[in-house]
Image (cartoon, rainbow over all chains, first blue to last red; front, side, top):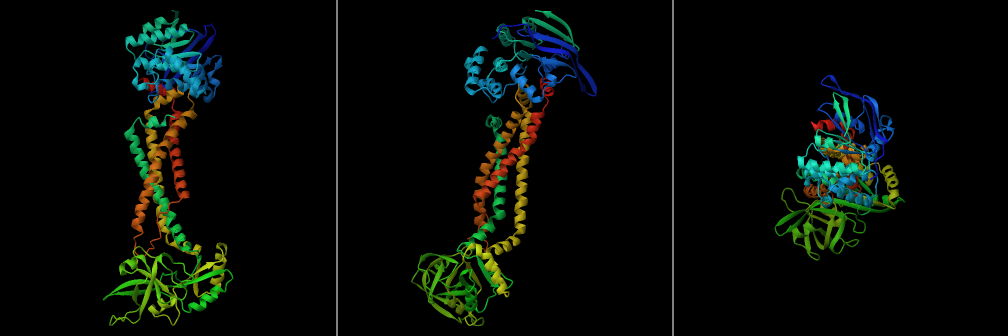
Length: 232
Length: 393
């Protein structure tokens, strides 16, 4: 893993997101600006409906802002065609979801290989890296297990290994411990800490106070605004 | 290449879908074979012995009616005089009876010229020699029925007195061999003998009558021009090439063909609906997974390919089994249909050939791929953010 530097790998400028719901307009984000530097570990916290998940989706290019812009490695997402945006998500961003979202018909190693296969990495190279990543997340002995044969914590570890597959600039995680019990959640928390220590940039949305406490910077959101930022 | 694992997620559902596709494919294949099979079989039968032209009484096709043509010897010489004609075979069909003890067995008698004939193939014994007027060939069912083998003598009765039911003409003939009579229906009791013999049995020897002539052109390419010349020279006769006869036959079967096309199209539509429905259900069930793939950077093209591959895989599996089932049912149905009275046993309703099988397979593959288009578009166009929000609640 590379050593952290202080350049912004992820930048949000005055992001606003409105969407219609039951005939009314919901203002999910009301002008959010944010810089995430390489090697940072940022936790975004706030009550339900504060706009955390919407912010993460906009940062990850999964949705388009109503106004404002997002830059990943200096590239504005707004100007990208769908294919280029998809490619950017594949190679520069890693995603970890609350419900893991592994392909149940694939084994752990095949799930990790999937993004590399899509990126055109050769079979031998991607297999070797998938083995290495599964070892890194503590699942060396579970590579051939189907996703459905793994526990929740193990599935989330596989999802983290999958997110790391193409050496992304930043990992975006949405409630990564939300579906896990306290013990298993602590394991994921330890893994995130180790990842960051090894140089991975992390942006994590969480309700989990322990997880937020691990972060180098904690951003509090309320009603679509950032209301507080503090260094951890 | 996860399509087969995806199919195994719901093995019963996949098996039922494949079974459905198997049945519709079998039906489609049978309809494709049926639509043109009998025509090709008919053409193959007519050309089987190399005779490309048929001449029959005006307004009829050979053996359509009991009408006959007088002056056969003279006409035969006239036909032979055409430079494009390589051979002329006269043919007479008549009723006859074989006497076995006190009973008479009804037979169909073919009067032929042994030196030039296109209606039988020898099975056993020896063929009739040119000018053999005391020999006879029996079809296998007739030989069995009469208990006759080569060298035996059979007594044939040609005409019965309608008042007294006694024979007006009776001939003793020596069985030369057993032949396969190509135009016979299954189990038909038939014999072939020299033309003068059958003319005598039918009581039409004086007029030298025949039912039809079959002609061999010097080459296939000359058949049509010879037909036109003979038609022009003999306007009182019906002169048809095999191509003409197949056309006539096709015209008679037009409703049959239309029915085949309609049923074939219905089975194709059912296949499309089956695959499209199953794939749409599958895509909607897996929308969360699909948008996750899109979120982590899997392209729309990959998603589309994956869904369409699954649809195509279902169709190929069902289609492959359907082709086997279709061939088996075609064989079974053919065995039933060819027992229709009066239909030559050599005719098949379902004629499998590589082109038709390839056509059916290609249509099916396109169907499977095409049926996957709509669900693939649904999968590729699903909103990542909206679907993830819906999944989270």
